[in-house]
Length: 285
Picture (cartoon, rainbow, N blue to C red):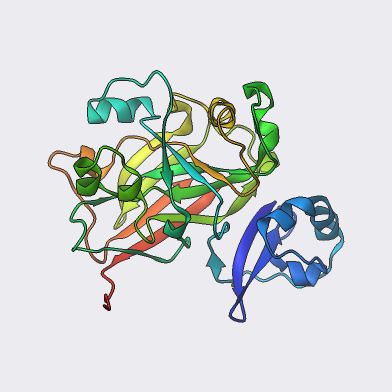
């Protein structure tokens, strides 16, 4: 099943799609009152049942919003693809390198990424597999970790590289407004046979930049969930961004950073794609 948030007559509403039919069915059409992702998780079995029975109209033409509006936690992993580690000339980490992206960075799957030249001149892309937690996870073992996954989506861990280099911690450089486009929807875990065998790609203005597979991860999804759960309880709606493959702009010779009007498309097999345009916003003071 796919879980989306859509703009329905100027208000956000959850909508659902399955492999048996094309198009989306809103929560309202299913007669299910779900206002948050927690509600969706709690009523997922009811939603599935009603999806299999409903004759409600299905709409292909919807305006997709970020499927998770304000995650409680966005936990990201640095240097988690072996070929990316080689690309940037770093030593292989002996434990996951964890940093936070803040929820105010969330952007929609087809919205804009804002360039702010007063803050950064080196904006970079990082296509990543995002894991969406569906059940509380506290001090769990890797063997049970995937039982706590609601599903997966595509994320772009947009980064201000010059800000990143200027500070000993990197969360600020990763958390500018709009620096975390996600989507286009959540594909539930039962639709993803193996999250470590998915093609992952980035295109900038149509030209391929990243082209790899999630099989190249150093630390896999169950390990990351279990590792993080040792120090904090993962809650439904929390997101884990699992690292990026080689091909980032900062790894090119010379580096190639994003510019105004560039179009960045991040895609992962089975999960779909997100596509965002770089704009310079009008800043009011």
